[in-house]
Length: 179
Image (tube, rainbow, N blue to C red; front, side):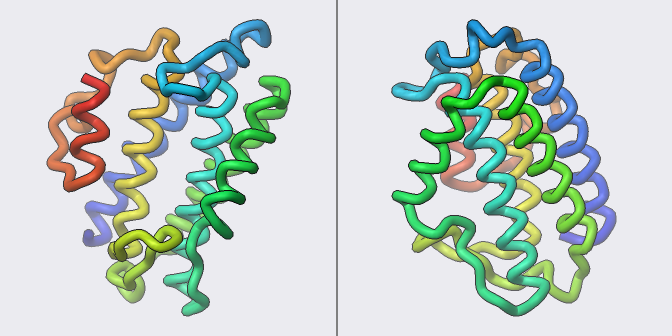
């Protein structure tokens, strides 16, 4: 992904982030702990997951930039515990968390240069992918999980450029599952 493509992708991520945050801002406390569209997860789980996945992707990009390997999450168990604990917080705390995560992701993404864009990274023990793909993965996380909140944002609300974006697996199937 070249510099122009990265700038365009950052614009898409910023717009998706604004939409997601607007939905969270409007979420009444009484609905935050209700079930989301993801089995076993409340809306709080989804919001916290978006924050933690943003942190994980930021860490992968930072690892590529600094040469210090990062895996996004300490372990699958730590990931699950962080999401479960975060899901119980009041909406205002979840909102503050997801804003801080989005801002730190954007800061690290802005530091991405061609020098490390192709550096292989991986989340825990999953397959490697180039650091520049962290941007695409962030966009996918925001768009899919916004729908997963089970509120006003629906698949039909996806921007055309996201709905028609050529995704590879597993992102292609994850998007198709929401349709």
